[in-house]
Image (tube, rainbow, N blue to C red; front, side, top):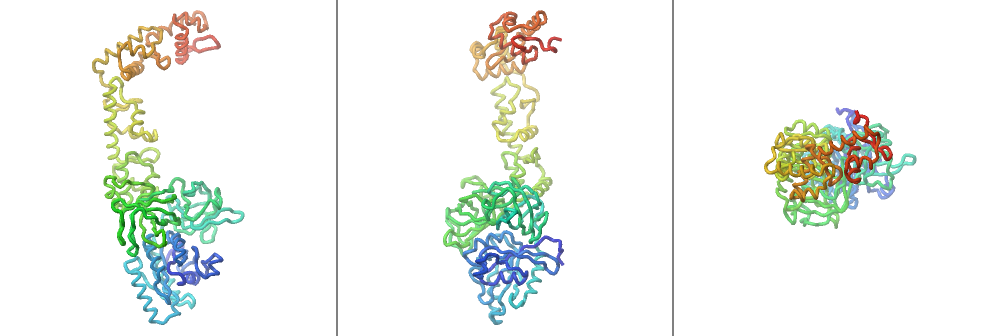
Length: 632
């Protein structure tokens, strides 16, 4: 017996028009899945319909009833993504028809793996015809996921075989694996409407995650932030909806006119709209050859857009073959790894193939080295292995959200998997890297630091910010700091160098530095301009700048303003004169202090402003007095 507290299993219908799908669902549930007036008037299903029931065991089922007419296959496709299993419906008086076969192909291409077949309208035909139709069904489902599944004979009008259908639904429901309640919310929208007094309501099958009342979500690719006002599951108001449930969500923060089928309600920052996807594409045996750049209809989830197919290793895909392809979309579509795409020809619109998304939002050049090898790994490797490979190959640390989009896994699944992997670097801000990738980066960085030190031997190392600008310009500062702390170098405040201590200056640098210092020292309290000193020292500008910075760091020079400096000895001499004069005479004007210093007014102003910055003096009106701690 199934556990009645288990989440509802979602069963879809599939099959040709007028084969009794909606009638069968109504016979099982007592609910008419056709909701549109046109559907009731014409007696055919046009759009998705929904119904629900509770099995004798207490297990709840939700039905997605899809249209069978070829004109409405796009609506049928929108319903498939939410199915846990399918009832393939074949009418006994017609047998397997074109839409039976197309629906079966769509189900397989979109990854449905469970179900059974129901032959309906059994009371309309003789036993021989029933036997013939059963044989037709066996032939049609051969080499598909329904090959070994039961075939139930039923009649929704008389009730014949319905008890067997219910038994098969019971058996089917216990085989369905539960979807992930944890992780990011993802709700592809298949219906949208307004309710007076409540506003915008969207419905869909909650693929992953849990939605609670008042949850903050976003609509992708609309880019709008929304809040959950209320929730319903199977017509009942609830405070929480879990993955695998059919849910109606009342949204605040968005108008009815802004929402449409194909958009996705998602946790903020976990899903984006993309205009390109790398796909492991299969072409149906019944399809014509697919030539590169062919325009096609692309379906994923509940969305449909136009696009073109490009191949990496060929110009054409033959019927029944598979290849890696890049699907370039004419408008953005919410996609992530593991999503299933369906490809339908532009005209006439028929299903020709489909496949699984390997990468979303990534464009590759045909001549990219080892591309096919890498895509093969993306197709064949498990998701944690994909993450490990990506972290090993990454030129920079990757954010957790990047790993979610890359792998299709939830946050908790990724963190658990990374915990068990050797060589993973967990950095601040939920950023990750592999030690192998870090070693490659650090070795390149080591060469950059070494080259910088050779070019600037006077400096105590390379400024960290220069290394960041060269090798990590877009990295967050905290991530860069965490990475360089594990590098093959010494960090000394803002400097990076390969040696533990600054190396001794090679000849003739000590003599050159002393010459520059003396040229500035000889100026006394008169600030010396860089250009004049550089010219007198006969140095290249870059070498001169390094020497001046060296003298600043050594405390032998002080900067008055850009391009002007005085020696520290001269500064101390002038400072002592000013302090002595003010202590003796009280606050003094700029003119008076100019005379004390014996320099021009312009130079005196620059010197006194330096004393102010050093908190030796402070300006009060036109006078200067000593700061108390300087006078003590």
